[in-house]
Length: 81
Image 1 (cartoon, rainbow, N blue to C red):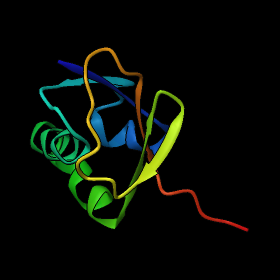
Image 2: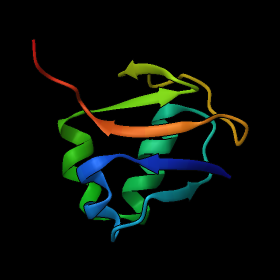
Image 3: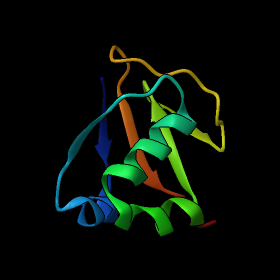
């Protein structure tokens, strides 16, 4: 199981949970499993989220591998300038 830390407002959409476990081997599966477990995350995921994997931030890297040994953090897209 992969432990995913939910950042900021994403926690509110997962019943206030900071950490959620999912069965996944890549970024796309993480998102699918999170949406299945917490349907309120669905619209936010569809608008876009970023994944931090061991401190490196990815956007739309669907097949980036993840494992239980990685630090996985899901966060809303960062915008600004």
